[in-house]
Every structure is written in structure tokens, then in C-alpha cells.
Image (tube, rainbow, N blue to C red; front, side, top):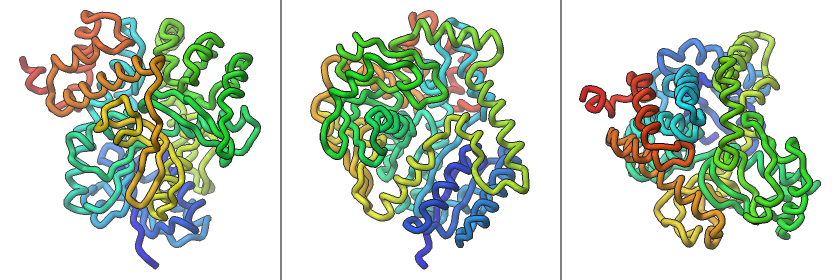
Length: 443
């Protein structure tokens, strides 16, 4: 049998059983012979726990896939066919700081948006670029499938500063949104396709099709009478129903993360309540992870536990494994990925990363033509892309001034003064993981 080697960097993640389940379910079309789970010394204990569960899952499934555990990234990467990244620099404690420090300044604290998202990018992008350099030497033909947040910015940085083009960014939000559409329209997921425009965690659905026929008019009408439980499949964001006026005005459905921008006041009030109770999202997730790793250690467990869905991992295996299988098998099906625009959005830069419906081939994603971004949606998408581009450059150069200017431009930061203060505090908190800013810290 042809060897198919997949390497997962951040293999000790609580998400890994979701990924392993996805490979097991698709073994008939994606015959993985080697799965390497890679982590760093600080993550060794979690890697062993998750890795042993992965081995039990594979054994129970009765498939000839070997699972390897390694702390040696270069050893693992040699001759890989696909590399997936799902790492968190600084682990969950860093995320807690990303959320709590902005909230201490009275602004939204969130791991992919605003100040928290910026600092996650600062910690993550240099590490991913180092991985890319290793891939160029050890597995130059491999595809990099990045799940690490902020996925859009990481993909942008790899393409722009890593000069590596076999990269696709992936998120489960469009998958969840597609399931929501199928549920609302009372059809199966397989019958639904969407037209989305925008960026990772910042996109709009502008059309939805059932068996090729537009049903957007029906969806817009349903949203006028919908309660919050039916508006989204997301479990990690407080859902506030969109007003019928907003939906009619936009003629589009915002993705759930846009709630931070369209309901900033309400989301901030909710986060401040959690902040006071020492239960911001990252702290809640840490509790879920502790429970998960306790479960993962049980020798009798040989499948993904349902509790993982509370982690925000629902549909993860579908998104990840479908993408890998479609590239491997040259399926030509439609998926929602982060890739270079290439003119698919005609009034947006051709060389920048967007999240968009794409045809998946052996040569990677081919973004489907989506025409112009509607005027009503263009402003917020352009603003956030400007922020992302500036953050990527600052992550590579360590330019503090550029970073503060980017933060000031972000709609979640109400003043230059707050931008300077929150930047200073986050830089101090994360300095161990930000060598590119060393000169700024010493000045």
C-alpha cells in the first residue's frame, strides 16, 4: 500500500481525538499509514495521554494506521504528505491572559479578535514560519493545513512572509453555519452550499443553495422570526439574535463572531460578568480540558468523548479530514477555506487571504468567483483585513508602533490611549514568547 504520512504539530491538544476519529471514519478513502503526533517538552504529559487514547481508538477500529508520538519535530516531518498545525504557544494560560488583560482595560477580551487576537498572532506566526522552514527542507511537497488561530492571519503570514504556497487555513465556523442552514431549511447538510464573503471569523453568508437553487429569500425571512437557539451552532459565543432590521439591511447573515462587533456593548457586559467571577471563556475551557484529560486517561476509553464538543471542537474532524481527503483524492468538491483571493472577490486585493467557498483539488483550493463584496459589508471586512495585514507585519518585524497603530484601528479598541496601555500590559505578560519585540522591551 502507498505510504500516507500525516504529521500533527500540537498533537497533545485536546482536539486530537476529534482528528483521529475523522481519519478512522475516512480510512477507506484516506488510508493513513503513519500518524505522527508532535509536541514540545512542556506538552509531553498531554501528548502521552492523548497519544495513548489515539492508539486505542485506532486499535479498536481495526485499521493498519500506526500512531507515533514525538518531541522531535524534524524527525516527524521527514517525508510527510500532510502537516496539520493546531498549536497554542503559551498553552491555555496565555489565552487566559489574552482575555483577562483587555477586559481589565474595559475592552473585549477574545482569542482571535481585538487585542487578544493580535497577541495570539504575535506568539504564533513566528513559530508557524519556523515550521514552514523545516517543511521546505524535510517535506517540500507536503501540504500545510493550519487550524491554529487566528487562522486567517496565520495563513496570510505563511503566504506573504514564508513564501510557502501549499498552505490552507481552516476553521469549523462555516461548517457549523452550513449545518444551521440545513436545519433551518429542513434538508440534509449534503444538499446545502453557501456563498460567503469575508475573512476568518469575520465573514457573511450572502447566498445559500439547496441542490443548486438559491434559498436565500427563505432564510432571510426565517431570521426575522427566529429565536437565539436556532441562529447558530456555536457553543463558545454568547448568542444575541440579529435584529430583523439588520438582516434586511445587510441582505446577508453575519457569522457568529461578528457579534463582537455588532453587539460590542452587550458582549463586553457579559464578558465583564465572567471576568469578575474568574470564569472568562479561557478559564471555562481550562476546566473542560481538565475533565477531558481525566477522561482520556481511562484505559477503557477508545472513542472520542462527547464532552469534547463543549471545547468548541464540534465539526472539527469533518472540516479537517474532508479537506485532506479532497486534496489527496482530487475530489473537486466545495469547501470553505482560507486561501488567496485571486480575484474571486473582484473588489478586494487579489493577493490577500480570504475565507471563501473553494473547489478542492490535488493542487489545493480554487476559490469560486463571488463577484463584488456588497457595499453594506465591504467597510467592516476591509477594516479587519487592514488590521490583519498590519498585525502580520508587526509579528514578523517586531515593530511596536505598527502594532499599536493596528490596535487603534480595530473597532473593538475605542482609543489610542487604551491601545498603548493594553499593548504594554500584554507585551509584558507574554514577553517570554515574543523575542521579535525584545528590542522594544529593552528600550
